[in-house]
Length: 137
Image (tube, rainbow, N blue to C red):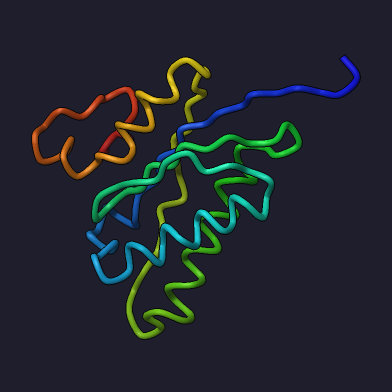
């Protein structure tokens, strides 16, 4: 093999400050768009994004040169900056400092992507996968 070959997939989850319902319908698409753009800038490939009013799930492929902490810091920072400086500068918006990150095998991408895209349904129907969610405490 003449070139490196990697398939590195991450399922990332992070919440709003104190789990406040800050991801309102009027800003949800702007937040997701910002996260997607920042992932692309970092060399990642967004496979799925979803969430509810107090947390976000992201399934992404990442290059081997990008650390998990660098990815999360940049996507959270850019989306928070967009909301607090351009979309709703006079309203409170903040992410928690913590996050969850899970490696995903190539064979499990479709199942995880389905879970990520259908967050509202899973939370409404209480069919969440506790292994893929952040603890509430």
